[in-house]
Image (cartoon, rainbow, N blue to C red; front, side, top):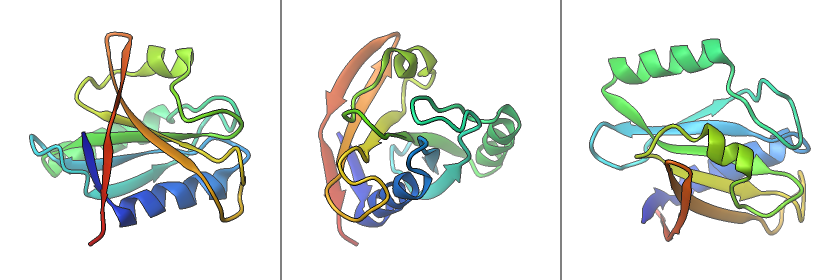
Length: 140
């Protein structure tokens, strides 16, 4: 189960809406070994695509060095889908390389950049196997 604060959910949804119609992507880091998402880190979709996301390799290297310096890990790796449901695509599954991370998808297909309904789901992706998990949102 992913336990996450409402503030972090709001930040992911805001990022997804701001980047629509392109997919948004980012990481929420947390203390190593804690499984607690704490630090929101929006990234640039280097692909600038409505159907695909890609982290810039230089930005990703910088992020991992920063997390190492802070004794953090990527607790959540998130991205948006702009025209489909919040479920990992084959490409998403093939690029999933963090077996301990929660892969969160936000779908903005109903409202795009506007306020309104969105879909948010979380998955574990390990060696090509996708398992949906419950999401518990906590209000601070």
